[in-house]
Amino acid sequence: MRAFPPDELERRVDEVLFYVWDPIGVAPEPAARYEYRSYVRKILEIVETGGEPDKIVKYLCDIESGMMSLPAREKQAQEAAELIYSHKEAIVEGYA
Image 1 (cartoon, rainbow, N blue to C red):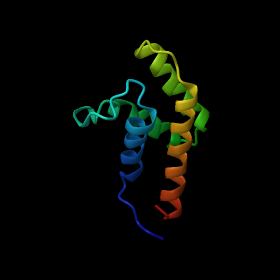
Image 2 (cartoon, one colour; image 1 turned 30 degrees about the vertical axis):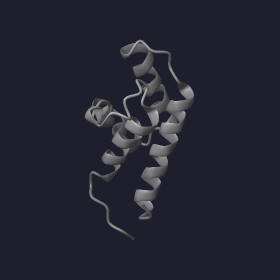
Image 3 (cartoon, rainbow, N blue to C red; image 1 turned 180 degrees about the vertical axis):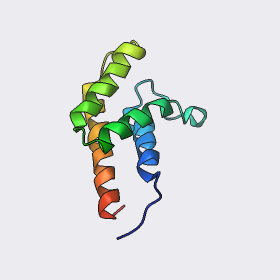
Image 4 (cartoon, one colour; image 1 turned 90 degrees about the vertical axis):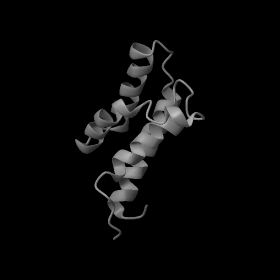
């Protein structure tokens, strides 16, 4: 089994938020790379405490509608949540 750095999932969550979720469309702008960094810790908490992907979807939709005053995009939030859990599984299994 391959060993990963302890912060590997954190890095991947940050990338998923930036490149997949990206509710304000900043992914093409390298200067905005850490735009969603403040949401990573809460998502890691959900994942690490056994929370379901639906909890991440709700959290991301709440951010969009409540904090950003944007329409919640459940489909993008679901895609991001599923990808985060896929990354977690791949890391745990030692595949990626």
